[in-house]
Length: 238
Image (cartoon, rainbow, N blue to C red; front, side, top):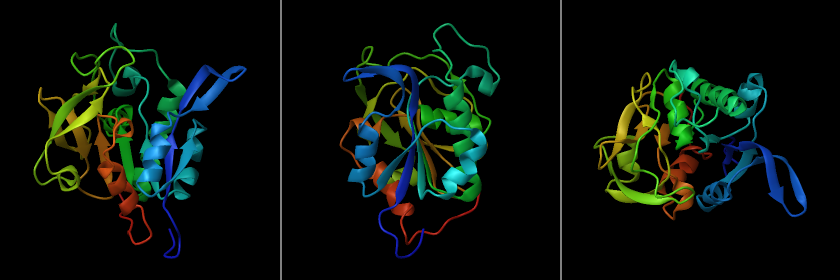
């Protein structure tokens, strides 16, 4: 990003739905809950939607961005981390898995700041060779209803420098990080011991959070991404 540029351009991955309804239309759609672009905008960035595309284009796409957000969504296909599908794991989203893994790899290779949200954190872990717990209880209030619980930062981490105190976060997930991916460290836990944030201490700015900051009013995580993606920030190479 040039020194004279304005607000950082933050790409956010999207859902790909076979059928969505708005107005008089019911059609296939690439969509994104409005909380994501609003959070980027409130934090001082410009939001750009990144619908699933040919994974071979990921390097070109990321090269045009100042930061990347991998959004929440469906369960990661267990085949991606070498496991058999369990009964309560949701249906696969192969286009999203392939595209978002390519975006993650491109961001890591180029040193582009990267934030994973919920599914995005899990996919970051999988991209680096980690695995997931396919079902857990206690982090979903009810079907289609976000709950809230506290997360505690790990001292000395990037996340702790962003949010140094235990805080309540909006949550909706039934899967979680199991074995950590290469180079990742845990930077926050829930009270029950669930991994709630991961980061990569070496190389570029990389953070994953298990909760949904776009469903709350706390701008700190997104603001940290936008800040490091800004015109005065350098780029570390992975």
